[in-house]
Length: 219
Image (cartoon, rainbow, N blue to C red):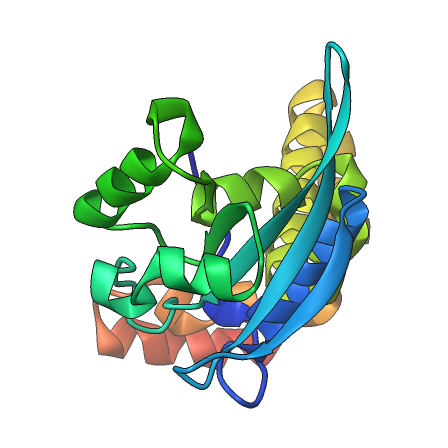
């Protein structure tokens, strides 16, 4: 599965835009978002308050959300990046721990989180939103506005690809002479003129390129 380029996120201090994105995703999912304040490592954590429904009723679960943006290095989040997970969860009076990262969790860290999970006999609930999970969120219709807001370059590239694909479908479904006229409407004169550059027409020989450039002046 292709993922978004999270290095496109910009903010000061580093990671602030990623944290804002995670917070907005939580809000969109219907979670009650609260700030936990700055922790011992100087980072500011979030808390999500979730109402979980069961057969006999509902219960509120408070999640400690730790945001780790490592898109610049593309490295996985390691155990040492988080410190003592249980101590942090207890400090903020939470029942769950959510790691949100622009890359992924290391194998050792994922195993540690799995062991801590209540489903495996651990004391808390654990969850990881890695780049794949976050991409799945953002490419869905529910989060389309966040995709536009936080990933403008992705949207620009996607728009170009859609235009190119539409043009190809049009050209293959029309007679050749009609397709040529349609193409002239879809491509600006400046772009068509650039296609006639010597380096584009004949990139193999500098002398031929100069001849092509001479002829291009008469177009």
